[in-house]
Image 1 (tube, rainbow, N blue to C red):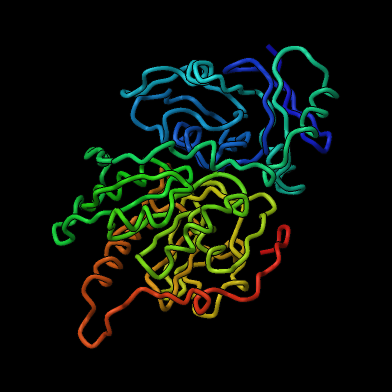
Image 2 (cartoon, rainbow, N blue to C red; image 1 turned 30 degrees about the horizontal axis):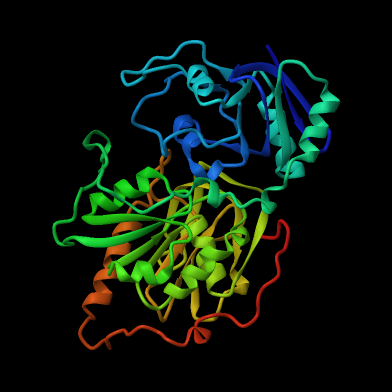
Length: 404
């Protein structure tokens, strides 16, 4: 069966349908990872998006029961140069087309993904329509243009959990490269806000001795504090951070009261809670080889990333220090507050898929918790901050489309 990917600017890419038949719309983005297509498909951060894989051969390892980052695929569609006709891996349970069909996700193969990626890099991420079967190219373009823009959608509400739950699963010992549970850390109670959380984040926290309770994106701050956690984690997730207004208010209410650690969307929400601004990148950062430099040590980590928005470092309060920058475009990749216990990074230290250079950030979170419990000699005991206006920027930075 033929399939068409139409972009809102009128560009057409024709190929062959694989996966489920049908019509789906979404923002068309590309990912440069060579591996990990199952993790990418199930990453809730891709909700509302049609993903283009730049690596030419996808599906050769099949699909297994262990590597999903959520219960089911979250993408709107998948575009590949070649869908492998054979799959071979000792953990494989089914092939990729079958997996897509079972989850009603359309796919298109045999299109020029190199030309498509170059077009997105030049023109920017845009709305698209993936259509299989009958229909004209003009109809597909009209469908793409009629689709809602990503910034107009509250995607977090689609992927967050409905009620709190406990997470106890650790990483499989087969894949653990470093030490497991830290013997000196003891048990820590962590509340994780689910904006679209990846399972491997939760596994890392459990690995390091945390008892993790996952709560919905809009879970009230007072209910979180009533659980008496040692720290709060803010997860990754899809869409425009400014669309998550309630979550921003919740996080603002937690500032200065408990140690906070944010990743990806959690990083952006923390930036907004501090009075900063975010802006949309031209085509985003999605892949497993993005160089990030720690501004304090000057060390460079190769990181896994998936985001289309960034925090404007110039809009953050003076008490906030930018700790990491992206060496490709100079965007903010991490910050911390000098007065209250919190830090955040834009990239993915749990790296599924991707390198493990930044995995130590989870241990940094536990160290931050320990510092708050037991101040070092000569250091005054930290107390909750009641005057949030002292911590939050007075001037709200304006959103600048595509500005680094």
